[in-house]
Image (cartoon, rainbow, N blue to C red):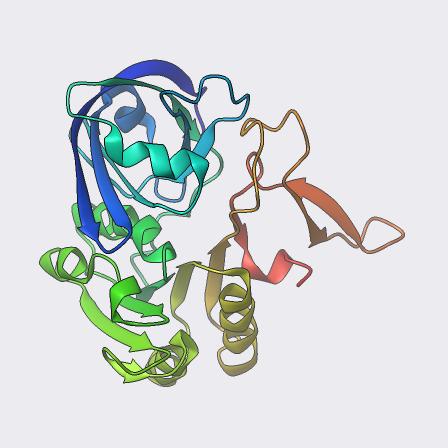
Length: 268
């Protein structure tokens, strides 16, 4: 059951480079942590950018007690300012927002798929699964190269079997993450799959699961470009199947009805 989001000041506990252009920020955010579910996100007002109307959305990477972890990549105006945020600073956060992943079922093999930056969004799901007492899920992590594979050590520390693929073969199996998924589905054709990553990857995962393992269940996190983050502006809509409409589809908001959707409902 979703709860109303909080808008609160949260103190930065640490803000350190994770690897390359990726950074990890930890914040004291008890109210958000109490309500957060894997797959949800927060909306952050970046300091020194108060003149910019839009906040920046970030997937919740992890929750441990009152500590909220975000992983971000320095790519633009907002994230370029973030490495300069020092411990002790207070940031204005809104969250948790959106609809997250379903709890991992106890009666199926479960697999978490993270593509590139999407690896960071799946760690919280792995932690919640372990905390629930179920067998740790398999974690499939894929990226262009070794430098974009995130948090493999943290997944392993939770007890997950970690399988890695890179496009250039610099780490793990050479190829796309679907190479790993195809092998997994041979032994677990009714697996529950939860995935986050670039849209082409999510489409490939969804189509492979539907074609090769019709008994499987698949949920995908579609992080469309968001503006308001609370469903008011309709700037992050995507098409989903709907047989009740003349067109056979309708728009849903990624920030409100998503970002997590059943894969079979997406009009790819």
